[in-house]
Image 1 (cartoon, rainbow, N blue to C red):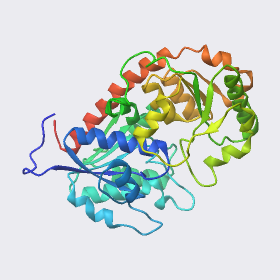
Image 2 (image 1 turned 90 degrees about the horizontal axis):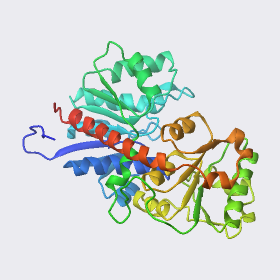
Image 3 (image 1 turned 135 degrees about the vertical axis):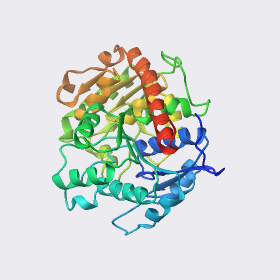
Length: 375
């Protein structure tokens, strides 16, 4: 990739997002985006909620992100010190209508884009989703601040892409679609953790990792997940529980909603926030993952770990369908037994993960081209 003429300075990018939470998705996206940029010779500074945590876990300089609750706005001035601003991951273009649409995630993105425009800095949103329908206020804000010719929008799903094409019709921004950046993870991990291939990585001991979330009207679905784990234990599997997100009063509550002690030998793996390479190492020890979460599935499948999903909503169904990953819906989970899970076809999901990894990397190259005004 040819580099732009920047007077001999190091190429600098401000990578902005809600990184620093105890959330596998946020941390894995931050890891993938920052590693991809760093391997392209870019100096990365992260704007995030918890700069100390990000500096420890990613080894990158970090600054406080734009935060309406704490009136932290200094990052808006820092934009001028960078060659480009990249926001990434998740529902960054999500509108919060309550209490005020002017103070949600979409509003924060619009403020950052406004600052980038003022300093003539390219602004890129990479691997993002967009809520729909947006309110009239949000539509106005998005078209005004994200429709400029310095803006590049890269959506991770077809629905967001199609909605954006409609919303920004007649505006000067560039719009693309690419798979979630987390699909690049296995290509960016240290060799000791990563795996490259199409089939299963290795013949592992029987180890089931279950990554459950709090589910609406949870009793039936969670009890069934417990029963599936108990069946696995009876079949000789070591069963371990692991939380991909740790939010006070929420994720850890899944431990108390049902009785996990009925699973012989069951233990919870440490719930403390851990870095992305450690997450990948944990998931690689499994011979099977049972999950209600998107990002553990992506990371595990990318490492050749057979993964079976429990879809709790339409977003999960879309991800599991696109990945060709076997799954059941919470509505019909009662008919599922563990024998069906282990007899599932996992090979197609491994092949799709490799394909999506290449597509996500193409999205990264679009970021580089847009950030440094390359053709």
